[in-house]
Length: 404
Image: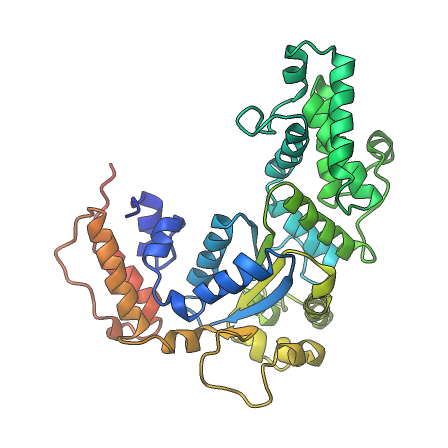
């Protein structure tokens, strides 16, 4: 049984999913409807074997969409995936072109893990396991301690890196990146090595290098529209080389495509930006064969699908790729590329979802030893506007914090 932390209880009292994966899983109802299928078919097999997929999750406010997204992310992390969460409202650039999306994804990547994983590959080639070398510190001192002169130790690291990375299908620029960043980390003799590592990672993040920085790193290729797909695939490839099974990217709040930025203000996305965003997603669906180990999960409230002027239905080339058939279905289909959270909730057997989640949460909090308040929980059906969120909020609010 998970330990209840203060931040998680407060999140529940606000009607939000907890951050702790164990608590999140413990209060999840109806995994067998979709989550188990997604985990087994995609995360454990298809994506892990090098496939690529785009799926859409749409649900009304308070239906549990955010909870499902967090469970998918928790499953992916537990299986060894790199996970990145983005919001269409808070991305640094509009979701209108692949270079912008790449930069947002790269900002969410654990670059320290990536570099450490690449270094561990080289260390393993030299006979060091993870207990002897974790990849986060210089490797050179370990060889020097065994009596090798520094020049010979450097050459051994360099030769091992060449043997390791030539096995992988990396383009010239990314091979230069790997070679350079591994040497900078494994040597790390002075400030110059640390500066070079910073520059290599700056390049990988899609940022522009100045002329002197290009000379210092030998990285002259730039991220742009013609190269962005190759860069994204190469980034995923690097993550897999470093030890990840693949990359899960979640983009939530896509109803922002249809929203105004403020009261009386203009739309967040111009008509052209909406078209560009839809075209970007269309390309990612069509380019599944060009990407490897990539899972993109798009999510939002119904307007981002249904709005005939700004939603996905307004862009025929994208909409026709998300159709599961010519006749709309009112039954929940876990195999569909577009998942309706409201249909998912209605497909649960027994009591309504809000009651089942409230009962599960009550059991989890009680087993964790939290003290129940004196007042009974309000009846969920009396909180009809957002019954699931209201049920979680009201149930969690009955429990007193045990922290001073």
